[in-house]
Length: 181
Image (cartoon, rainbow, N blue to C red; front, side, top):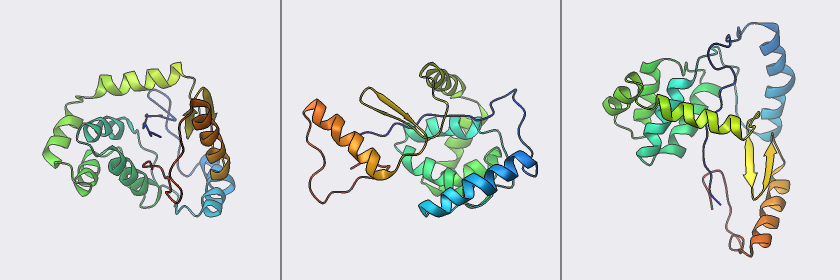
């Protein structure tokens, strides 16, 4: 099994950002996001900012080239959803990139020069062409699953696909997570 991270912007430019204090986002957080995070045991706090995320996604391309894609994305998610960091601020992004072992100067140069702007746009276009409208979205064989699924259901779908392909599943006792098996 391979995890391939793809960007997904809820509100890409020129779509206006939501006011964190507005009714829509407050209600969505209170009635949907927070209860689900608590049910799943995933620590999340209400993010005090709603930043543009294209620079963080462009920085992901740099991290990916350096072999740090998973570490980078995990750090960005924790920084935003637990610590409330502004992922639209280059200085914040550089500090977070350094925390996962990336060269801060190289990262800053990549982000400020917009070196990965076209790569990011191509990834967004690919997601649009695949009609990705939800996070997470999984492609397992010829199936597209959008939104959250219970872990046991995902396991069943993966096992069925492996069986269909004639590929053995993970060895007994080996657990899989977002980083692979």
